[in-house]
Length: 334
Figure 1 (spheres, helix red, strand yellow):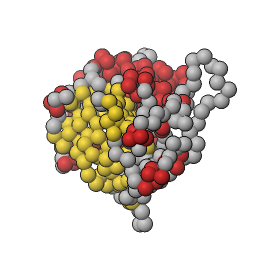
Figure 2 (tube, helix red, strand yellow):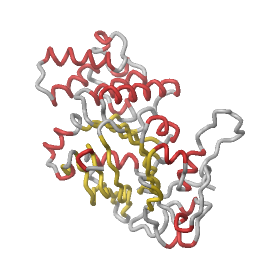
Figure 3 (cartoon, helix red, strand yellow):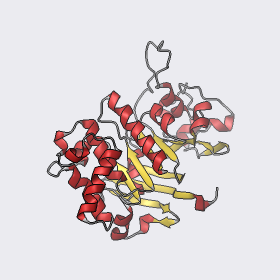
């Protein structure tokens, strides 16, 4: 692929957490590309580094304990990690925006929703007050808010959780960004409302030809919404490829476990599969396969050295020593 086709290139991104005694490699060498209008899902359990990777892309991190230690984030070929704060602020929210997972912590309770959407427009455009007000109403219509002329004066607490999330989407899309990062955008919502919000994001992405980076722990959601998938575990990518390839031929035991958690359509499962154990917190440097303590395929080599990403077929990668021995991985990772 020609590099000019890529809107975004993330190369060997490394973001570490620091405490007095330990260094945690929260993101430890993540790389991927995103073309215009393309959708990519970053999936894994809580603690795998998904949200840290997303926040690192737009350099939105708590610097009291977090540092980007290496790598590049190229937006149209420019490394935006090296930009001064004022230039980065011109990209963040305008060219690359983010949909956060919790409306209660994202929206300001003392300002109306119209004021909060209008603030983004005023900050990143030359529109006058009257034009901003008109554009706010249009954005509320776009995200499906009923009676937008009246709702523009509502405060967040006057709206349901689903409507609050639509306001966050309106804020994210106010300036027609080229890339939207959606970080667990439906976690705080009821199941029925989740489907509506996901459909809305899909429709708007297709209509506006935006690049989408979807962060989620739900493999079913990412299979439904994304063209490409990055499976993260312990701060690294363990499998990467097109959704079709990963769903058709699972390569990594962890991916197999995630796919096994998706309920079957026939409803004859007595009990849903769950991956045994939990995601440990690794300290730098890591000298083993990060999944080996939960993996039924683990061999001695897994505990002695971390495997690289092997390219098994064109564009389909997996971080597992099994690929040197030709072993297969079943859907449940067993």
